[in-house]
Length: 302
Picture 1 (cartoon, rainbow, N blue to C red):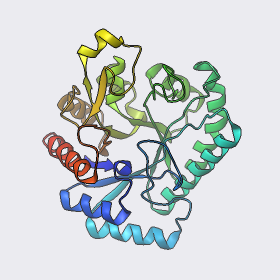
Picture 2 (spheres, rainbow, N blue to C red):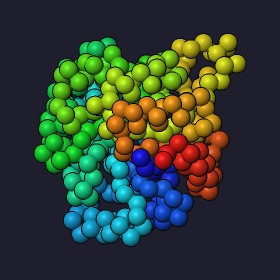
Picture 3 (tube, rainbow, N blue to C red):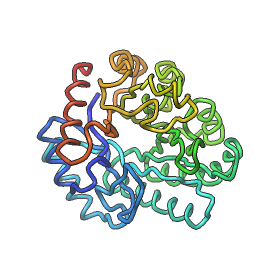
């Protein structure tokens, strides 16, 4: 099992800068952020330009990876793919297809994304829209030899206060999604940090969805219990009664989690998703946080 990180945390760094840092510090893999170059979403960046990537540039990137002994584990573009505005939705799906084509050029087998949500529809009313939008995407990806891995963040308050902004966030919705799109190349970019604050047993989820776990995010969750008295659990925004931390600085049982992944034959990558407010603010602090996460996780990897 390898350890890498999602490059969205370093939006000002070029691919060359990021891979040099990764190689120097002992990361084996990179999960490349592939949002559009013009993008205002938080926790996003564009380490490579999926729209302009061609065979020649892809060869340059692959050679850089080979020289530094760092592999690309996944290309990631997470946005609301079910936006109620059809023009916005179509533009995002078109970009997702560009990311899939880039994965093909780079010989990367996984693309990670969100499903999103139409905020004007109830949760399960989104499922027919999801099916219409994603069936062609999954088939397109399969034709390129690429798997689609849904990141399971609930995105609370993303579109409206208190509203789950992303339908692919919990097992009862995963079951609905996989029943509608049972294709073998459709699964999860599994992140235990979201499940923990939701009160869902992430260990049991590994056992139940082992065949659908294509990629794993390494992010921890700290529960700020003293804030629950004032806020209650319904106000579930990041930094309210919980916050994301680097692995080892929250409540995830990493030893048991990694052991369970290994027991159920997951042997790909743990990709650190850096959203820790303590280790943010500038590139040096962000890199220090990544190094702390790597140091902590390495003790569990044989």
